[in-house]
Image (cartoon, rainbow, N blue to C red; front, side, top):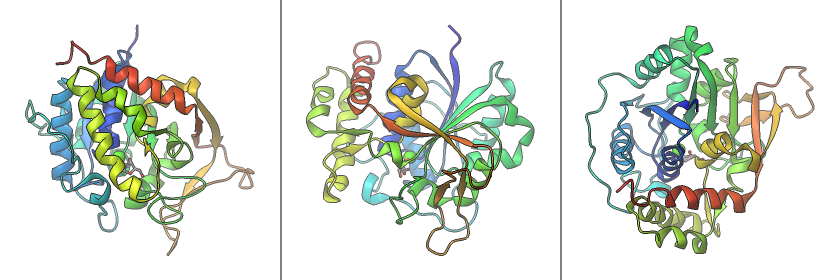
Length: 313
Ligand code: RIB
Ligand code: CA
């Protein structure tokens, strides 16, 4: 079986962490590198979290830190959702190996250059590293099979009315990405706010006799605290959509659109806007993920957690 080479780029972050659990659980994915970007918390914190997640999952892959700040403007962080550490809740193992001496962009470029097959980049934080890679290494664009990204929302935002957090933190990097010509799969809020798991559903994960499953349940407990205060009755699993829409496209609905990123608007900066009626006459630049079979989504998460029983202790 030809495994799919993956680079995981994110700002863990509870839902990034759960996305990486899903990636590690699927034999079809060959995780070549992890790169971190400031977003949910500062670069130091998300990088420490990434290294601890890798230790928990037994992932022996290079981990490199990316940019501390967005391409333009100031960093926004989200301690209300992810806590002071960026991954509050359960205790985690200490990092197993050393952090890479390369920067995230250099590590991404190295993986792209050295891979026999084209590489899928799963970007679940602000798109700063991806934007920087595309600017620094345009010659490597054709080594990228697809960028599966969590970010944006064609109908609404979640940080400002029009803008979703990952895109709002660094609209310029997202703009570069959406204008790069690289194949893009966009998991925006249109699908991720439907990819919900309810507290009674993750009890079965907690009851599993393995450390990864119990850690995922505890991450969901913490992540749900603030969501519940906001009136949600379940945990919206944004970043996991970027993995499951690759491995199980059959449970999702897709639409090809031309999408652009607002970088100028005083109130609309960071909005992702689809040309639904093709008024601009431009070819679609992304495959937008629009809907998901929620029950099957939850089943896949439960099965992935169960797969860590015994052989990942
Ligand atoms: O808006 C949701 C996104 O912002 C997710 O990637 C979450 O981890 C945060 O980074
Ligand atoms: Ca994230």
